[in-house]
Length: 377
Ligand code: ACO
Image 1 (cartoon, helix red, strand yellow):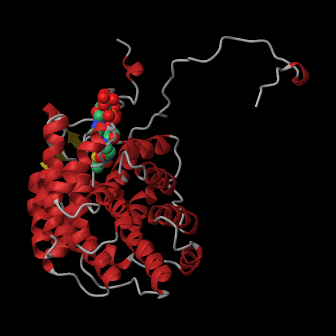
Image 2 (tube, protein in one colour; image 1 turned 90 degrees about the horizontal axis):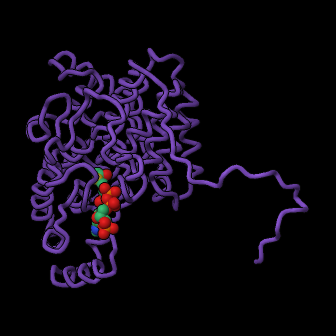
Image 3 (spheres, helix red, strand yellow; image 1 turned 90 degrees about the vertical axis):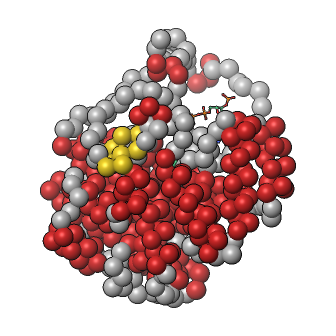
């Protein structure tokens, strides 16, 4: 069978990676040999970021120095602040991140590939600042200080957004969310970033392209679409009735299904526990109950399981994060996976340039313009 004809490159092995395994035997996720369950239970997001960027977990000295470097790189250049202030309040925050990343690439270009680690750390540290600086300026007219002394990226983001340090529950919940989103083999946005890197283009171009690919609702945008669905319903009964109608109309339910996992998405079980915990703590039990009922109906009617995006939606909502910031949060984490793949691609590069089966017209004669037939309107 010609595999290409199945469309979407399903099942096609398009290269090698040592960064993660996804869905071996239909289940399971590992980052450089560590299971996602262990990382979510024991690591902080910055340890996982270090693992992905540098290939090993950091020792105490390496970790302290990494945290320190990230803290020093949070500032947004004045000219970039001016750019952000020009972007309308109606912009989607993903447009802001895409623009911010591209602008930073012009202001602080990667001059040679040896700069790639510096560029990755800078983006990892600065992208939360870019996002929340724009958000606060457009929503409250305030030019916030982004160079806070918060210890972690989760704390930094929540403090800039909410104006106070987060509770331990919120900090850790977001930390786990970031760990789960960090890396996922040859998904659409990572593959996009690798294609750009394979042309020997610069780091910021590859990340900017990744952001563009992530934005769509079939990929990262699904967490926002899932929230829009969940918050439509006040109780599980209404949710079930509505969902059955949607399925009868053959609508896709965002946050369900996966190209690679066949039995479950291991990240979903982890974020579901956090969603339940947060919904209870924040008095938003109905959000969890509605989500759980949607899951039950999807399993019963379609034999489909939730992916990471589904329970992330209610978890992020309980953290007080506006829905349009959900996919941007995915970016703030996935920068690590994208960066690691760019490094890996560059270390053993060959231009990624597949072929296509031609299905267009056979060879035809050139016609001058006055001899071409006029199409009826
Ligand atoms: N709801 C209802 N039906 C679905 C869903 C869904 N979420 N997902 C797939 N199906 C159905 C399709 O309608 C199709 O049915 P058909 O064969 O009768 O036409 C069949 O399952 C196969 O679907 P495809 O879209 O071809 O499967 P593919 O492997 O290409 O898609 C994808 C995987 C894109 C994730 C898909 O399941 C989907 O669109 N899900 C919703 C979007 C989503 O949640 N994306 C997040 C992905 S995970 C992440 O980025 C963290």
